[in-house]
Length: 411
Image (spheres, rainbow, N blue to C red):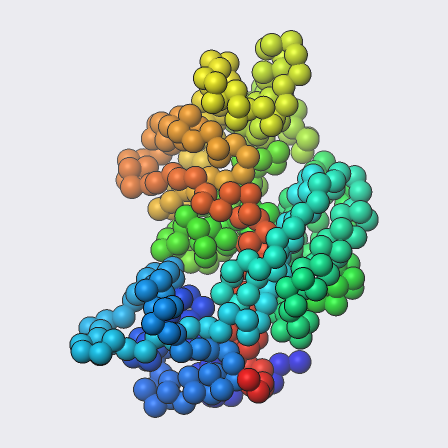
């Protein structure tokens, strides 16, 4: 149970929040960013250092310190302290707390344990049939997390919680999965509650595309961007959206299901029951199925990257057509939300400009110049770790409140 909020804890929360968003700050910068009095910041910092939550950076740390999302947001008032001797920089103490992350996909379970600044300390996964065997998936998840905690030597009381990203729409209020046609074995399950029981950790659950946008925003290609769409192109297609720095979930938490936007009115029947959804055209299994029908031999989705590298014309055309369809589906999102950046992740992102160029052309045709011209489309920088790191980031986002409002521990 959290301690009652008071002025001291509010000051700690503000300072911890600023340090969680910037990797290193001076006391003057903290005054500027938090709006607290200089004396208050000094007192709070001293308390947090004594509690082992904040550290003074050494000269060895300082050259690589400026790696936060916005690099530096100080005004001339704070910058004025930079004359003469460089100011002492402060940062979070990485091992003051930990966050666990899980990515449950259709064919794998992956776990990470990170420190307080998001550095991955342990990463492990298993391959298995997740969709039809939730018991094995949950057991594997609990086993992986137990190994992570033991091998890192993390004290359980310092683990802030477990973030769970899953390849299925999630009701944001109840944590229930909308698993029909997607993960049939999981219908009626609440995996966050079950994993909480098995691990003893507080669990927060999120859709894998939303986990992806959290990760790319905090650690990857979308740093410094507050209006971004993360598009995951894998066996399922979904989008995570940040608008003015806040994630958009919608009424039930089901926003971003771009894979089920109709792009071909008379197209193939989708697993959701509709016809011509984007997933039936632009997912790796859909592209592989198209080539299978064309060539009269089985084509596995895992072959697509190699076929592209060899310059196979049929594969190039299929990926270009997929990019055009993705651009048409994205056009609605771009016109409604006006993002500055689209980050593409998932298996198909490795196609690069073969995919991105038709996406750009399609967006230009189907949106206004004012929306399309400044828009950038880039591959994700975190690869297949975006989902699991975003799940951990879901927990890290609560760290300033959790640590700042709790009674300060002894260092």
